[in-house]
Image 1 (cartoon, helix red, strand yellow):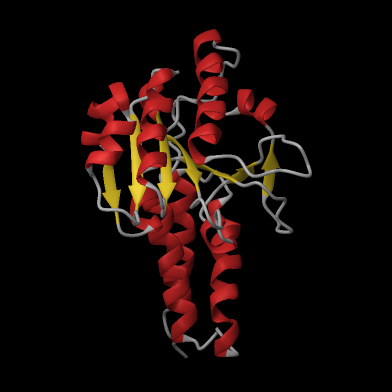
Image 2 (image 1 turned 180 degrees about the horizontal axis):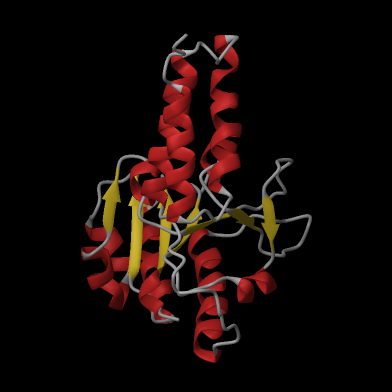
Length: 239
C-alpha cells in the first residue's frame, strides 16, 4: 500500500480558500496528489497559496484539467463522494468499507463543487459512491473538511495494513483510459446504428451505459474481449 497511489480530485471548485485548505488537509495525512477540474477561480492564485499554508508544493504540482473524463483516465478505481443517497444502480459504501479497497491500485476520490456537489452524470464515471455519516438534518460539510475526514481514515488503513490481497499477479486490471476507449467504441457503434432514440433521452442513456461499465473492475484481457465484440458488431453482415 502506498500514499502515492491516492489522489484527491476537486470537480469545479468555486472558492480559492477551499482549494488551498484541501491541499493542506491532504498533506496533514501524508498525501501529495491533488487534481483540480475546471476551477472557478484562476488557478493558482495568491489566496489559494495563502490558505494552503505549508502545502504550497502540493498546489504547485497540482494537475488541472478541463473535464472529468480526461482527468480520470489513468485511475484504476474511482470513489465519488456525495452527501445524499443516489437512486442509481451503483455500489454505495461507508467509511468503514474503505478497508476493503485495494490501495495498491491507483485510487481517486472525487469531490463535487461547493454549491451543487456531483451530478449523476459525473457519478457515472465512478466505481462507487461514499457518503460521510452526518446529522441527517444538516448534511452539508465544507469541502476541505470532507477531504480531511477521508484522508485520515485512508491514512490509518494504509499505515495499519489492515487488508492484504492475494489475487494473482498475472491479472492486470484495466485503467480508466482503456475503459474509456472501450466505452467510446461501444457508443460510436450504437450511434452509427441510430440506437439513441428519442434523441432527447440520449444524455441519460449515455449516463446509464457508462455507469454500467465504470463500476466494474475489468481486467485488460476482458477489455480486449469486449472491444473485439463491439468492433465485430460494427462490421456489416456478408451474405
